[in-house]
Image 1 (cartoon, rainbow, N blue to C red):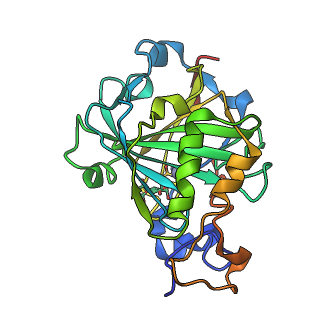
Image 2: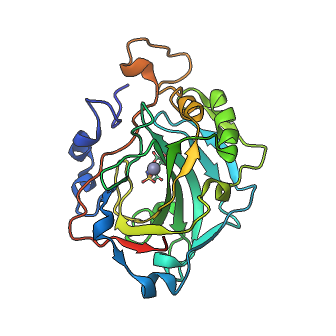
Length: 270
Ligand code: SG4
Ligand code: ZN
């Protein structure tokens, strides 16, 4: 069937606005982080340190939606609070990843114009103010996404657990329950320094509901692990079609940066 949106030449990011008017808003993501223009906001941000907790059993199922891999989580017992989120408590809904066709591109956010090999997103919703994820996704303070840059280097142990499951969800709509412990907190860098700004979901409908929190430190993943991501298929099992762009593999599933406009980028920690 005809897809509503994707990352191809035909239905890619530059065309999303035709079907999803929010994509033309003034609070869109990702953005380029110009480190020289970041505001250090010590009192507001460090008065309440960013804190999170994810039980090791939070990861419940791994899914191939046809444009990334995603791990759906059991939000019970998870939280993210503090920093730009103040006293509101957010629960983890899912985490997923964006990557490129080579190790020199793939992240959505860029730092001083530089892209990383990938970007991991932990998506949370505000349970203090909203009753469901869907309700929160429509509110300006409804969602919080933790972003982690991936750089090609040594293999990442926790991510290897995910890489080992990906061949079982190689095709679109494949879904596999997770029976081992994959701990989302082990996917975060050791240092808590972050940049934060107000933005949107990076995929249609591009709701302007996200407080972005991007770790300054990247994590290393191996070239091989990235290649396992690049082997996922955009089409369902049984629909093998050699005429797909790039043989139908999921690559370059990132939206390029949009103007920051008059938004403020703040930082906390180094
Ligand atoms: C990915 O495509 C996820 O699979 C989506 O999750 C997610 O949408 C979308 O990215 C946008 O999230 O952190 N990149 S992002 O801004 O979380 C939502 C699902 O479709 C609504 C469940
Ligand atoms: Zn994302």
